[in-house]
Image 1 (cartoon, one colour):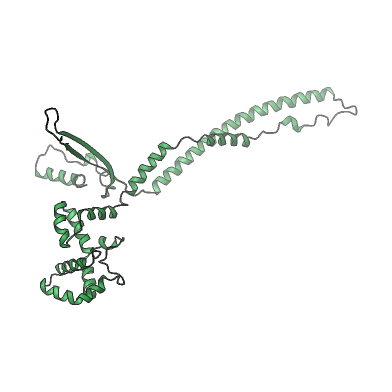
Image 2 (cartoon, one colour):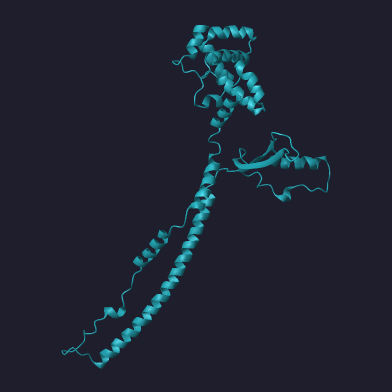
Length: 313
């Protein structure tokens, strides 16, 4: 039996009972897995313990785990699971201090460290949400973005060619380079048409810009509504959890003017809700509640069934 215990506790054997940084073994703890590990590596000791425990498999595995932890403190898978079970049932520090020397569980401090290690990433969504809010409050307005936008608008602004610049006024001149009265009238007419064309272009451009803006806005709204309907976010419910802290400060010497100070504090923080209430509370309408005019046991049972979701959550 000593040889078998030495083999299972050695570094060359990767036993599931060994305390490692991985949390898979303690999260997926089962007596069947522990029994297979012990029965395969220490069969002689298990055969003796089975007779002493009258065939009780959990008791046999527990006794064997106590002996292995006594030999090597890192062989504490069963003790880790027991410590979490005791913490869940409200065991205090005195219970841990009594059971830890018997190799039944871990110490109270070791249990707290284990629970912190197991739940270190549980509230990561809450922390990321809080950090995003803080980053939005701390980020100043970037003035370079406004400057770049105005510069881009000036660069992209195109000037249309004037209709008067496209006309060669000297095309029909005589040999001496002078134009006739008819040419002067044509020149004045072209100037008037060019001015009217500029006014028409300016009005049409403003109208087109308004149409394009409204079209872009409606298109954005449609695309946003489509994306909202097609993409359903996962459940992200939060609960506000808090507790009061009472501290009594006793003076070193009793005096008439020195009394016990009673300090009361309250702390509150947000945690991620474990219960998915998607489609439960929102689907319940006020019209679906039974009326109180008909008092009786049936009406009371209906109210209890309706509000059981809220109470248990």
